[in-house]
Image (cartoon, helix red, strand yellow):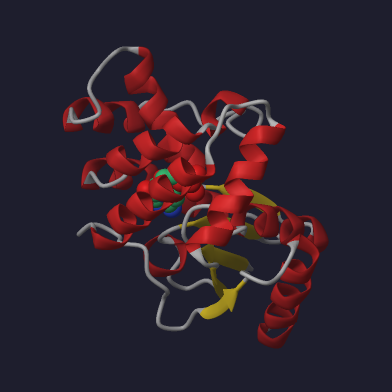
Length: 207
Ligand code: C5P
């Protein structure tokens, strides 16, 4: 069984994905980490993010082990850079097989990202689209960055989130949008527990 979770930056889909995976005993993949890791390869080698060929090559040769434990991937700059390289079709193509393989695990898998229900796992049994108002997402991201000891300004984060939404939604390759058969959950007024309970309710309805 596959649970596909899509949604914009800081909508809570990562936390939700993790909890649903734990609840059902499924594997969990935060697919944003793949794009972040591609961006990091370029940044570490001082290659401009506009170099599509280098980005595609980095994606083809990506070491996908231990991405979960790598806190350097989670910063705001890496999210922004990821959204640049993720717009390149060859980068997306190179990461597709790994994501699909991950989704084929028994007894099931939870994948979260932007195009899981639309492109990566169009046949997923459960598709959730998680949203929240940009201001609330910026507040969450702000708290998260401060708690990790990063310097962060709320206004800057809100601008980043709006820019990233715009880029992810308007790109021609795998734009961020709900799959036709996705169930949308707005978490603006829900905390992590409330989001989990509401999502569990939606999943149970589909099982
Ligand atoms: O989810 P996260 O913020 O880590 O994703 C970073 C960026 O990677 C997103 O802004 C998006 O551009 C890209 N991404 C994507 N497809 C996915 C997951 C992430 O294009 N499935």
